[in-house]
Image 1 (tube, rainbow over the protein chains, first blue to last red):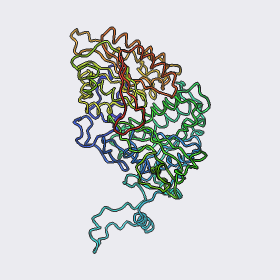
Image 2: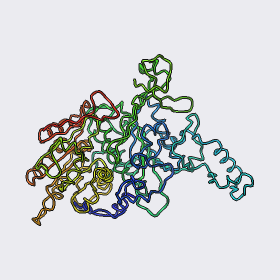
Image 3: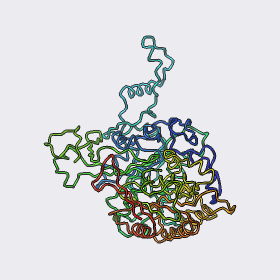
Image 4: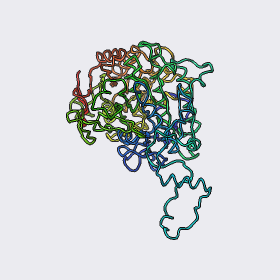
Length: 399
Length: 229
């Protein structure tokens, strides 16, 4: 959509910047309805893509992060075309969970996935995704249909004939059009869901074996390969609108794990004054460029607690759109704090993007704690300190 | 354009000061509203604007601009606005090597980066037309933002040189204005950024600083602005 018109123009001279592209100069940020007088956005073309919804604030297209509580804190969801940066907790226990929720949400809603990791094979990561908690009725019906191998769509109902008019539930356990699902971390995602989904994997040790031919441009070898891989997928599968008349539009969910860690060949976690200290920031900038011109959303986990140079952390934060920090209580003095005894850690919403808007949607409360209880990852406001230890989940005091 | 800010700065779109370098700075809060203000202000003042937008896409500025009463698409079509969309151009220059020099050529270079192609782009965009009769009031260069250039591997000195060249050409020679946004990293000890900020603070005529509240977060009040000239 966005780049469709302008990608085709070949040379880039300074004068060409002035020349507007064709009339269909729309980016992935579509506004719905007559909210603005701007006719340049062709808003009537907003085709509803499964698993997305427009933001109530500014018409921005949103996808779910896989955790409805987090969606609410981020103002409805993650905006398409943006990066969600997760600052890993100290022992990297809870950030992979958020990572997996994001990917699992993509499978359930039928989005295409792109999983990049330097540590684990993406196929293994997908095997460990949590199982979605679909409605029991829906699940039962799906199972029955699979067993019977027939769709029975033409059987007329005699008594409950009103139900015939309701839309049929999909026979195969594929894309759900709901926004935001709940997952059971104690169970694995069903194999057939993974097989029905479309995904691309980038496992660094496999991709980096060949020697680099192009000029260095001060970017880490692994990052260059990853950028090229992402750009290739976006272009080939038309997420940037390069094949407008083809199949139905879909979202590409990109997940990059442990970016900036030594496994990616980056040395910002070892020394304070490293030679290529702009490698990660350059990568994030190029990634932002790719995302803004395509229908995709990205989650990145970065071990910021390992980065030696504070300036780089600040720059990385500035180059990401949404930043969420996880702080687990394991091994810290907060573990014995009676206030936090039911919780596993704190979750900090450090930054929310202000897209298409002058101000952003900020939640009221800044102090939030998370806990992983039995099956669910929940986010709550911890009880106030002045009161007794009696737990009050509805109290509005901030610590 | 925010009327309150205009009152504070004692300007209106009818009387625009010329030959000034304005530094926008934000600390612990988002100062992009200042960029939107100046963009809509200068477009309403009938100036020719060259906007180097490195951080967000065109449609973002367009939509906010419409809320502030200017249409960037119209301005771009009639030639009043020259818009360099950094993100899109960066993707082009990185993945599809260009033969001719591109304003963001420094992305492909390994060392501390040369912003000369960018300067030449600005020069080309804002130079007065030879037809004699000036269609626009004065040229304005707006950059959002300069700190991201440091993240892209350009040295602080190179960025200062770029601003110096732009100031010499746009402010002195063509009696125009330059407005640039720089983030203040605060206690993050970003030396390069501090060099840039201090250097520009010294050169500029007006510094507008948006700070977060010292007492912390508050939902309704986002921060406090400070101005010094």
